[in-house]
Image 1 (cartoon, rainbow, N blue to C red):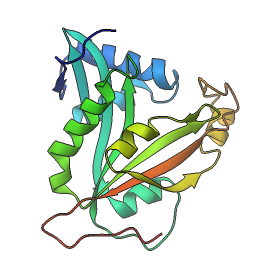
Image 2: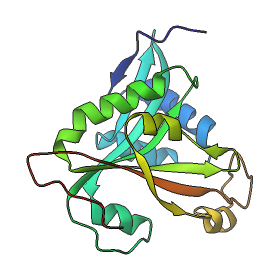
Image 3: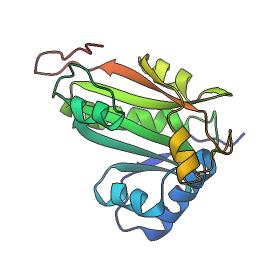
Length: 193
């Protein structure tokens, strides 16, 4: 197994080759229609992506967002008495070589650099018939599951003919939202689910 101790984490902006390579990893992991290239470039342009590089090879990417708790849950059509506190949404993680530490490095970097700006961290994880993608990894960082959204991509998989790499079409996969509280200078903002 390759040694991935020399991983560098970068935020990419105008590095066309790196963007293309990172996007290919995203497609290989999550399906060709999970996110279109223009949307990925939007995240890149807005400094919401990280890329891991080992020996000049792009080996992973992470998409994140700094937003409010209310905005985050509105996106998933979950209505509740959510706070308007700032959160970090670790939205998408894709790596070229699984069980290699690449995902750990990306999440660790993201939390280390952005958690001081927020009160909570959320991570929507993909659940297919194969299990919950990256659940052990996020649990290692202290995340716990709080909400399941069954058949999350079902309508999209029919209407837009999106292809799920596990189900094909229609997609019966779910999202499980994982949560971690962050202590800040402000009051601790707790989930009220």
